[in-house]
Length: 391
Ligand SMILES: Cc1ncc(COP(=O)(O)O)c(C=O)c1O
Image (cartoon, rainbow, N blue to C red; front, side, top):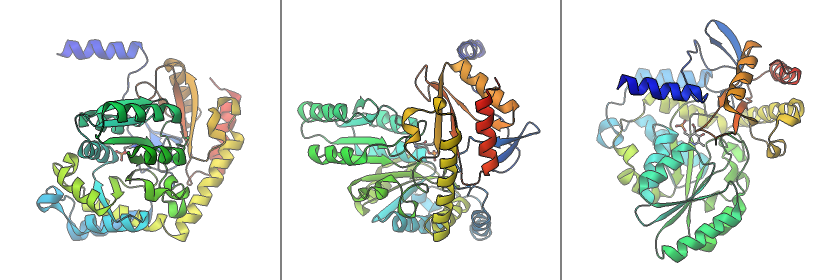
């Protein structure tokens, strides 16, 4: 067995696709310490700078005082503590849905939800750039999978026509993201919804990179475009702009009751720590408050600065037009991308090299993520370094 691992790992290294863990010795901040060096962190999804916010810390600490650290069992056994219920009520109120259900991660939310919605002979139609959690959930469901090229509405329509013809009377689920995790661009939601209506399909929308960042009260892209009521299954994560961890599904009361009965990653997993649920409540309260709106405005300023300063040759086409916090700088070759990341690190910047299988082969990239917590000077410093091409 050891031989097998050694050989496979060597093969990964030869293709510049090996990964390893690095220790961060402190909280998530715009500056982090790795291996004794301070680096300016452009790798975090903590878009609003909440991960180390005193309000979240205090809420977590107070919950530990009252409920202890562990939940002890799954929600359906004896782990259903008050902070979990309060969080779900807060999420449903914020997202303006009948109900919400929380999972221990966004990954678990996708993995539990899709197989609860569709099964053998049903059809799941996914955007090619959907996150691994959505793909894995779709695979696990046993439904027939169809993939459409990124944001290609003509191809989505073809798949829906095919599903109607070949799987008459079966359930069809469209799965896409609102802001795409590795490209930062947006789904054409109005068109997706038009097609969903036309073909009587269900729509599951992952707003992982949009909630907190976009829309009224940070409710996400569907709310910003006033189509949230048309999204059957609103997925999101508490782990990015909300600064805590966990995933959620918002939707109808019936959907949430069904998932409570059928989502295996919910049923067969110990409830998240009450501390993390309490921190997430504080995050939802913040995001929905006027102060949350101010923080979003600050984030938008930082995004604009990055758009203005980052050499445009490095930017993916769509990105300069949109306003997500994610700036993909596509280099292509895996090793070349690693070299750029290493060079940036030697200049004091932490920017992750994203490679296959997270993105398609040959589209390796630096994924620059800007947050409201970055100082202007930090953004200027990164862009200047990139301009000077230190590698
Ligand atoms: C689009 C998308 N969906 C889901 C997830 C999973 O969320 P979590 O990190 O909470 O498991 C992520 C993050 O990794 C993501 O980028």
